[in-house]
Image (cartoon, rainbow, N blue to C red; front, side, top):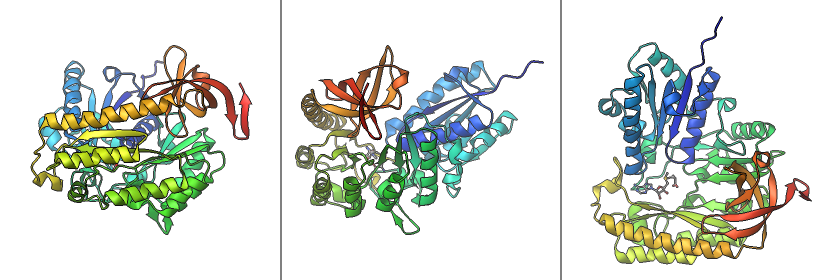
Length: 448
Ligand code: SAM
């Protein structure tokens, strides 16, 4: 008797860590349903594209991928194509009009229904669509999440966003905030640690707005931190308005909480910040940074900036460049403003020409690269704690320091998940090169 080979799936993910985590949930559910992973879309029976709508370019990536899948499906008509995530939520069945060969469409709250909808599509049913935003996003059982990394596990703490930033499509695609009960989060972290994960990253669009049944964000951090065996704790993304003294204290007091914070500022101009409806001004942001650095002087800070926001003048831009210089971020993500459907900024003229947006992008980026290059060069000769998280090709691995810098090392898969003390022997603006000097155990460093 020959057994029928298992069906195979392939997932393409665009966007942020939350999208990666959603894809991990879909993958886990498919694996539990008897599917196997395919190495490429061409080898798969089901291809799922998890989309990002935050900028127009990201959203358009869906249709580039669909163009390729259309050709695959012409050669293999039984191929099932699914689309999920923010673009699916935003454009809904409009996607089916533009790409009628898409079989399954799910919104941001319906990952749990993917296996069932694929089954229906394979049985020949049409209309395998679920865009219901009232569905419970946390329905996917923890054990079903197929984490991409064997070292850093993403754990959702909050879904959605209650902010009203003028430029941002996320509240429309992911809906209002829903916090997950702290007990569930802690239970998931405990189970991950028992399965060997040394590091956990708590996720949410504005994760530090967390509040559930009287448990605030700082309390949540303390509870997760206390899970025995956890080595490193991180979280992202934070909103400056929700940085509290309690959160700053947590950075100072909790040794497993890594001293790195991504804190998007978006602009250094009060006029632009007000139009963006960010809820703070420049002084508010610098006070927040002072609060944090008062507790942890070497806290690594990264940020997001949007250049070319409607009406952004040269002096607004200079205010941003000055702020970036003043704070001296450890890393920076600069984006060109992109008008998004349903946002309030859409009513404003997108009046900064593309070439000027690009020039502002380059000014900030070049200065940042220069700063990072200088800072990293000063680390040569130092010893840093590195948790190895990636196996690269040809006898090389890489990992992250507690401050989230990337360090490349010689080594093989045997080092994955191990914490090393590395001597820094080289540096570029975006990564360091190290030599493993000792292994760090929970009780201290031992020679390798
Ligand atoms: N809610 C998270 C936050 O506040 O960081 C994630 C938002 S988004 C995934 C990440 C970054 O994309 C934002 O911080 C912002 O800098 C940028 N962004 C959002 N909307 C944008 C737009 N319309 N045009 C350009 N960049 C945008």
